[in-house]
Image 1 (cartoon, rainbow, N blue to C red):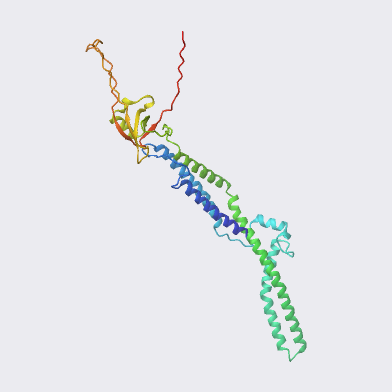
Image 2: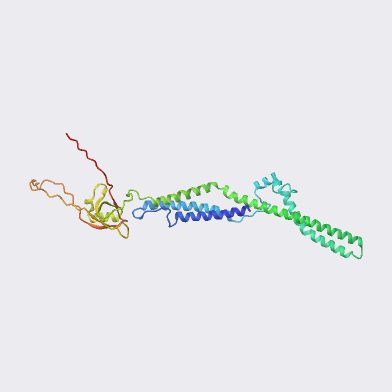
Length: 335
């Protein structure tokens, strides 16, 4: 039946929506995600949370709306949807039996057939009883009662056949009414469906992108560094800032706040982080032939020297970028 197929489709739609919600908003990411920390990436995680909640609300709206189709619907010939009644009355020959020219006439005839199907067998039994009583007493009465019983049984056979047809048509009309009422659940709230679909789509896509995109200002993925190769070290977050301050790496910085280091070991993973060594420098000594500056003349303080350090570059705190090799062409012109 159409209404049963519609309910079956609704169950599959609900299952599919639940599966999509599990995949998009569940533990398993659709695409790879960077390591995010609420202390350093609070805004990004808040945006992801808001988008995730919006997406879940959208999917919830869709599931709630579709689930209404699964609720039982009370339909009878007396409360069919008005548009269905009008459609049947405009072309009764396409739905109703030949002797019913409108839905009202069909309903009245069905009731009459139901009554006749109950009364005719009882009348036939009464006629049989009268025939039996008059068998030895009045042959004419016996013959008339026997003929009446036969006609009543023939009439019952016709009524039973017509009743079966009418009941079949009634079942079809009731199913059409249930399907029409269930369809009105969707057609009557198109704005809600569109809003739910948009919230689910935008929320799910935004949730994934918010967790996938790197935090603003972070460096792009670095090329893997090899042992005994010079790389540029950078860091982000509170731990990196504390390390930078404690060990005076400010003095080692070049442009962009990066520190040139020599990779001496490791694979750049959490289990085997890179072992790096800074390239130390020292303050240049003042030549002996330079006049001594009088003590009452202010001087510009010299920059501190870059310390010599060897440490593990935790990939969750530090990032290593291998400088791209650049070719420089020098042209010498003879005068």
